[in-house]
Picture 1 (cartoon, rainbow, N blue to C red):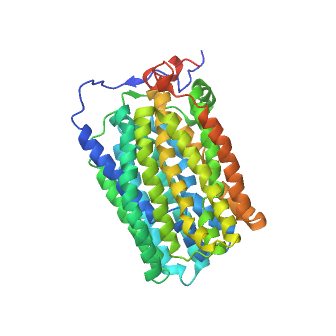
Picture 2: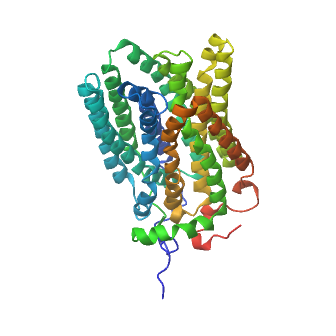
Picture 3: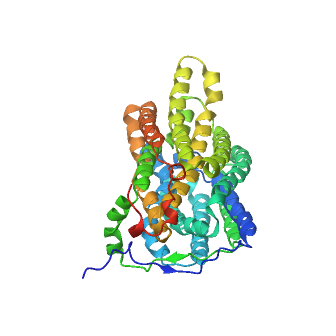
Length: 452
């Protein structure tokens, strides 16, 4: 008799309590603070502005700059599928999240030390030491992705998650908006490399406040816990799991098209500096513009998610992601036509669209996956959706190579073309709330879920 698939085994059930949660308001407050402080810390550690600008002080290689800009994204996506197998066996995730978070913060402190000691005098050595620490810190950040999302899904009811995620991003975006001006001041007022050392220390402070806030959450245990299995057997079961939830597949097709923005993402700021006359202080302005976009996009996405469903949020995210490279192309044309002041003044719009895409995309795709997948295997689908994105983060390196031979405009054009393709897919995405059936998240595990 063959062993059953690890994703179809009966789950161990925890206690089910239909009574009102006395800790709901407390958890909403502390989780909101968690996300707010994390967003504020990220403003000093931004992958689209600060990190590529810092990398450009250590090397002239566009490919290396693209790699540095993509490391945090790669580290976020890459480990999540492996972590999902471990996470689905945990009834509580909080302790694991806290310990791993502290390790990541330690890595950021080490990055600040390396920058202080070597960036100003031995940039090659600084880069060689910085990269492995940065990679490990980014992987540690990614390890938390699945257990944190699953803990939130267990603790916060479905009709409050959209507003929670929006509150995190809106309040975090407001704080990060002002942090953008602080970034500008630090980069212009402090000598190099102390300016970047200070930015990394500010990042660590924001992230520590984030994890302190998370400590205040009263986590609810998982209702269903799947028995852990060998990694090989678990991975072999994934294709069947993929096929079992068609809505998940359709959402991922749209998300993978959106992911081609990684090709262009780190080069918007480099293009502005090299070809459009932007100075170093403009990096802070771009951070603030991105946060404005995230703020507006997140506020709208949270409302749409709870009231209209997550399909509309996904459409909004893909549209914003497409408009970012299209705007960069249009403003480059204006600059070359002689409208230098107008092109420079409007260039922050690129980051407004980029920020809107990030905020709304996270809310839309995360909630859609939670909604259409079964609770017992939710961590698997969260991990699968994110790990499949990991190879696309390397597109920043390819973008650097393309930019070296074809120029930045060719890179932006490719991102825009795939964005338009993703928009067509998103518009055809079904919404489980509006087609007369109960979302799969309420139907049991994968074995019981019907195909449609």
